[in-house]
Image (tube, rainbow, N blue to C red; front, side, top):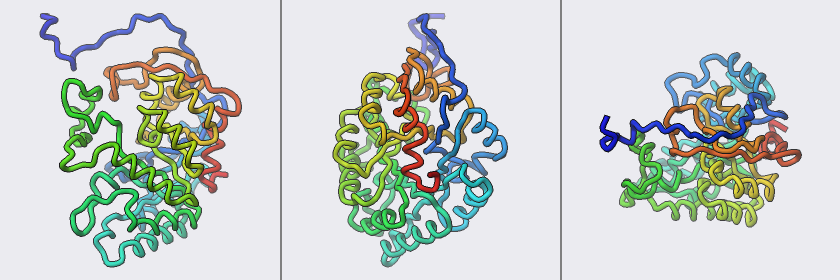
Length: 349
């Protein structure tokens, strides 16, 4: 083989470090996965074909409960509640969504608030807001609707009144908004998923505009609890995340799908969690969660292992790097694993 012609996608380097390895198949204390997908929103059919098998994974991994983000609304919400929350009390908490298509209807805010109240009455335990708000949702004039749009103000206030935490995914990794060229650190991932690239700013807002909208939303509704999914959408800038947590007591964040980012800056990530132990929730963003994924997350949170894979895939999906553990202990680990989720989601208290 002419190595000068080797393609990057065929490159499979083996790390030659000799480092300690501490596998953690079971969390050292009960954990709550506060960000998982168990429904039919993102998959053909149920993400979990056999709920019994999932319960076995939870038991083996010491996962006490899961927050299911796939409830949607109406009949789909009812189906999720029946399959998870009502069939297994205390083990699942399902979040509803809002139908942004109602923005094209007369009096959209009233309709959205009505839908949210119906979902709460049915048993929804939170409101999941996906990244399409700010990136793809448009009003009747074809204009993008941002999270801080004044027309949605009543919706966020209603969530606070109903005691429903709002778990909101705003933006995406910052590289998804960068030029698609040889300098983009997520290039391989974006070539695999071209619809994840938002760098065409004729169609999509800039990353900074989305973060500004997120902050405006949290600031304007102090009586509503917000959980910024994926480390508030900005795991690459933990200084910004810390400022948000310092300024807005109604904001928490989850670590779902971001241990790849946190694990390559373990000292900064550990310091953030140590300074804000009551504001960070454990989550995986898996569809569905597996024992292997949980074990990787437990190793990241509980050990001081260095340079280990964040994914079981031969080519790591988010970037060609390894991660190091945070070695959280005691009250900090308990809060991240379980305590914060039980506070944010009262149904699990």
